[in-house]
Length: 351
Ligand code: FA5
Image (cartoon, rainbow, N blue to C red; front, side, top):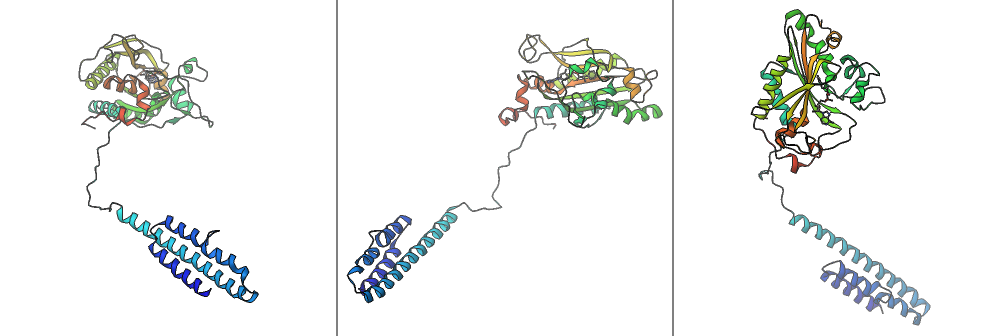
């Protein structure tokens, strides 16, 4: 009997040495420790032994059982470690000297157009100003001649925040601050105010091919003695011809904005359909691009400038629509899509 215990122990050892994987190990476990396994049947045969023999033999078989289980577990650990080692060995080695393909990224088409406009206006003596996206009611409306409850507020479905501030619905929100920032230099030193201020605007719009709820405008202002509509038209035409690198057809029609008097809508002949009419221009052949006008005396006064001494013009260019025209993007929604396939194809060597 005792002899069998030693034999089994030796047999298990040999089989474990030959086992190549976890499947082999499972077979060994079933063969010795399973319900019908060899060690289990040793226990079953004990009923023929005397009480004394059963006691000693039972203890020996239990020891064998525990040691078989231990050997199998040790082999499992050994095989798993080998598996991990071979996985690590087969991994590609990290080498800091390997050249990496750092393909060039690209700018968003609106960034490209914005930078181009900034550089054109800078070359004409304008400063480029930055302004927050969250502003007060005073900045966005009251300071630009739109008092509380004025019906003109209905033209811009504005997002109000719980603290009473709002998401800038128009870049005109910066006008008052710019007048105050540069007014002293105008009054004391005769230096004209010439500034542009691009920015993201938000309106609760139903979106379509030419309307988004988040879009970019670029506001511009010039204030000095004897500024007239001719100055306004000159700067707008110069800027658009530079952006499109050709003479662009524009039209001015009367437009109402409480912060300018007189006010105009400057439309550009649709460059997507060549003026024939398409979804982007609502089949009119013209795209509303740049409302503008002569700054209202109330706005100048609120900014600390005497309207009897100084005059000025202001415009609110639709930068997003300008990018659409320049790059012939038919649907404004592509610009906020985040699709690199759509947006990474535009480049400008000057940016
Ligand atoms: C204004 O926002 C005035 N503050 C512009 C202005 C400034 C007038 C200074 C006079 C003097 P308007 O709401 O029309 O105006 O918007 C100006 C331009 O922004 C539009 O011509 C258009 O090009 C663009 N725009 C307006 N709403 C949207 C929209 N939902 N999606 C895309 N572009 C828009």
